Amino acid sequence: MLVCLLFFSVIGEGVAQNIFFSNVAELSFFSEARFENIEALSNGLSGANEVAPVNTAATGDIYAVYNQATKKLSYMINFQGLIPTAMHLHKAAAGANGEVVMAIEGPYTSGMMGTVTLNSAQEADLLAGLLYLNVHTEANPGGEIRAQLVK
Image (cartoon, rainbow, N blue to C red; front, top):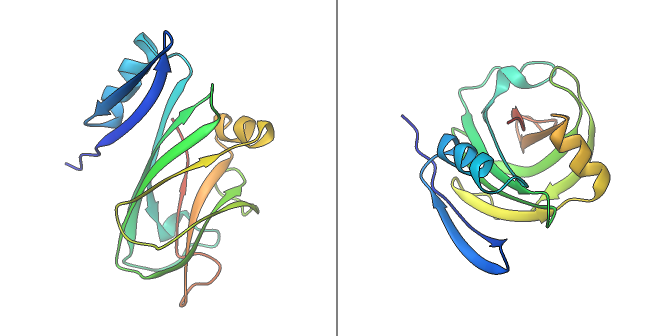
């Protein structure tokens, strides 16, 4: 069983609070009970999710937390079996290719974490399930593994 550790700060009742979660399910439950403006998203990265599918042994996953109040998307990306040359968030439904929305900055190491700020259009696309992470490699410059960001 894969366990993801998420740590982030939220502002609640006028006080900054550091929150630590051992898995996304725990975060989802906690956010529904206390932080209505927090969304937990995750999915597995695979070549089968690419359009057209890529035959690769590479895999990975992305875990993300979106704060609607601050418009910040914090993420952790794990991968194995490839050396990324680029990572992007794209806009499209599962099963379709889409335009690049924003680059994910390197260095690209498994377990990498970061935060990006979304604009209103990107937020609407994220909450509608229309954003995906694409991991590009030298062997597959169009993308080797992909994951739709979903709740």
